Structure formats: C-alpha cells, structure tokens
Image (cartoon, rainbow, N blue to C red):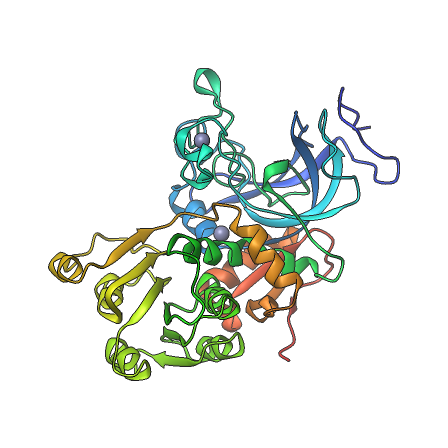
Length: 387
Ligand SMILES: [Zn+2]
Ligand SMILES: [Zn+2]
C-alpha cells in the first residue's frame, strides 16, 4: 500500500503503489507502461488525474522534442510521461501541506518555476531562468509537468501547491482541463496591459487559445472583439464565445476587413494565435499607432518582419510563454462565474488507454476535432453532442 514517510493519505481514497502511464519512446512513439506512483515532497501534493486535454504543444513535443527538456536534453526514450493540461482530485499531501485537503477537486497550471530566480520572483515563472534544471548537480527544483518533469498522461502526478487551482463542483472535469488554456489567453492580455474594457481587440487564429482569447477579451469588456481565421466552423464557435465580428481570411483580406469593421481604424490590441508565416506583418498592420501585439503562437520557419513599420508606428510586440502571473486563477474565476462557456471548444473524449487514437483525432482534426480530452475512468470514446 502507498504510505511514503511524511506523506498524508486517507483511507477514504486509497492510493496504489503503481499506476498506468504513457511514456515517450522514439519521436511519435508512445508506450503504455507501469510506473510507481510518485511521492509528493514539501509544498507538493499527489493529484489523482481525472481528465487531461491534448494540446498542440504536446504534439510538437511528442514528434519533435522542444520545448520539453528532460535531464538537459531531448525527451525521447527517458521513460518520461508527457501531457500538461490536466485536472483531478487531491489524493495525498506532502509534508507540511495544509492548503489543500484530500478529496478536493483541482485543476493545474503547468509551470512551478524554481521560485528563486529573478523572473520567478517577479511572478514570471513561465520564463524561469532555471527552466529544465531539476536533475543532478544543476538541480534548482524547476518543475513544468509535461515539459521538464513527468506530466499528465497517467493516473497520478505530483504538483507544487503553487500550480493548483481549486475548482467548484459545478465545473465538469472536461471544462476544468480548459482552465489553463483560458489562463494562457488571460496571461497574453495581462502582458498587453490587462485593462481592455472599451478597447478594440483582434484575435488571429481560432485554435483553443484563440477561441478562449475571444471569450476572455469579451469578458474583460473589450469592444469590438474581432476573430480572424480560415475555418468557418471555428469562426462560428468564436461568435458563440463573444466575438462581435469574424473574418474568414480565405474570403477577404483580413487587414482591410479589420480596419473596415473598426470604423476605418486599426485596433488597440492583436492577440496572434495562428503562427501563420505572415501573421506578424498582418498583426502590426491591424493595430493602430502605438498599438500592442501579443504573439502567442509561433511558425516553424524564421519569417521576415517589416521592422520599419513597427518602429515608425511605435508598435509593441510581446512574446508570451504559457500562463504566468497567476492568470490561470483569473481565468478560472471567469469560468466558475459562467462568464463564458469554455466547453464549446471541447469536442471529443477518449479513455486514457486510447491516447494514441485521441492524439490522432487532435492532430488530423478528424471529425472537426478542436479540444480532445482523455479521461482515466472513461469507458468508451465519444463525440460531444453539439448543442
Ligand atoms: Zn498546452
Ligand atoms: Zn525561476
């Protein structure tokens, strides 16, 4: 029975000694293995994982490696478990932990940071200077589950208490996996200045972060909120999440459309979530002089950028990584107050043992998949009924 010294458990929620976990082999290869259930240390809890969403970054990591960094290098063939957008139930408490109780439902943010570098001390723990340094002689205790430490495609994982967000019973497991995605959008808007009520916002790229970016911008009072993309079914969901206007870039020039929809003027903010090769040049032409652009996605190739236009017009560019400055807590507040319905981006659910199929759906967008969720106790695959 699971009873590590100093760790508190409850007989109401017994924890086994070993669990099922997916581990990454060669690029693109996942294996379902048995692993010992990990042990929480000081300021950590053991989370029983109930649901985990698949993210585009997981696909990037599983096939290419970065931004995962395991023991100073590529994540392949290191018995390492990917997956980072999960939620679950607190199952055991590390020494001294009284901030959470066993049986409490939580969702997680990814980056714990080292807690001691300059950026962590500024609340920018997703830009920790000790990223990936958590092994051997260079151990600074950095944790980013699913990036630099074991992640969520398994039954149990250890989380620093700073990465936990308590959720109400009214929030479903599937919706709770989306809190960190909404948190990433919230962090982008936070970095742009945060106070967006009455200001105009364009979101480019209707993936999960872009769609929830629309929802968060609207909840913060932005007006108008314009979403651009190339898939009508996703633009439709953007309208349901609060976009005032949508633009299909296959049908019209998105820069001209944005200016027309905003009374002939550029907008105050663009949140770029497409990663398309010309996205930066489009974004800097969508904003007005002195406008701000948040870059939340990246193209695979280096792309030429019109620097002269940026300088002449005093345009600000912000690269953002992850969900810093406690943005996840603010996103969760909007979601638990029902300010928007994040479940509109969740399309499919699979059981944990069918992870490779779930990944195939997410990767190939089979059946218009957007957010695909894997559940540890689900019995069969299901398409979420359209409402
Ligand atoms: Zn993600
Ligand atoms: Zn740090």
